[in-house]
Image (cartoon, rainbow, N blue to C red; front, side, top):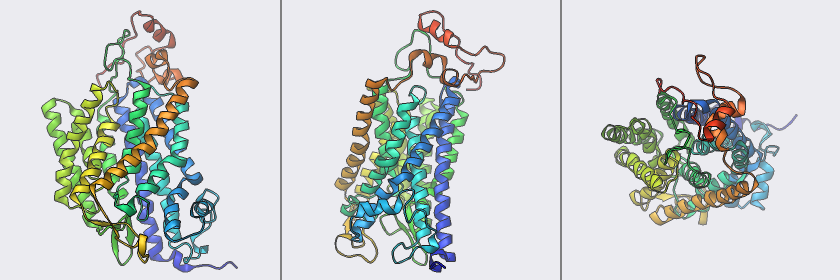
Length: 473
């Protein structure tokens, strides 16, 4: 009989692993929420293809991370514990066929792999984060991106780039955390990374037809149903508190700490989450009523969550409420800058990149001098709390995340532009991706669905087919 280690599957160990499992599954709700938001904001003739692209990109991102991306994040711990050939050993242990990945926790020696079940569930948490990253990136280029470039990018991001930002900026012994960079809710590897990728990609792919100047066909972006946006926001709001639990270290008998072992508390962290949420919601509603634009009332809460994401574990409700109030203002300013630059991206960059950067830098000032980094029981360069949070190290973390996203994105965009293009052709965009790609239409039975011939006629300066009715929008 094989040697077993019952402490690996004790009641406390299983309970802790289950809590992290709930956090991992909650990230899937973010993907669903983003899908609902996009469903509400795209033209009705693109709804089906939007769901297909988003789900496929998310699945490719998650599967590619499972191949070996998690090992890149585990690399930091092998370095801290002095494991020989730390990256190679991490790959041996944590690729999809690795020794730790495919062995039951009860058969793993806790002296070598402590809390094996938790680490295996944390692999799933990383997989779902890669899925959310790709869902967010797709949100920034809906209705015009070709599937192949998106899916190739999904693979590269999940396999290498997203875990690389996690290795640099997220974890208690990561290279930049050890110098003072602080993150909690994945602001660097998710929001800043995805926002930068979308910024570059939206610049290269160009605006949708009719966004900044009238198109000869009369085509323009038309929201399908704004009610779905509200449903998506509430779903994401429901998921975030559970994700926050997975973004920290829950140690039975000792308490809850930030991912970089900052002093924190589970109850306080959840209070901070809701304070940031309410701040974004209140300011978003104020902007919505003053500008007669309901979108800010619907999406404002998300900016509050993003701008406070680095502060949730070390802040307090007052700080998070005040910083959350700034979320929609930063988003509004970012959106105005994008319009001035003629970049068609009204969602991800204003809601994720702008607030993510400002929140990360603000945390550097608000919590200047707070201890972070290290690992319990280690000394020297990896001693617990040996680093301190500073604004300039927060800036270094922001620049590192943006460079890791922006440079590869630009290279891939240029390659695809030479190899056939990033964007669907104008005829396909006019007729709608559902008909062009799947031969299906979301028009009612009493309406004649558009055809390729209709779009070609419209593109030739003849009257375009009428846009779908907006009575439900």
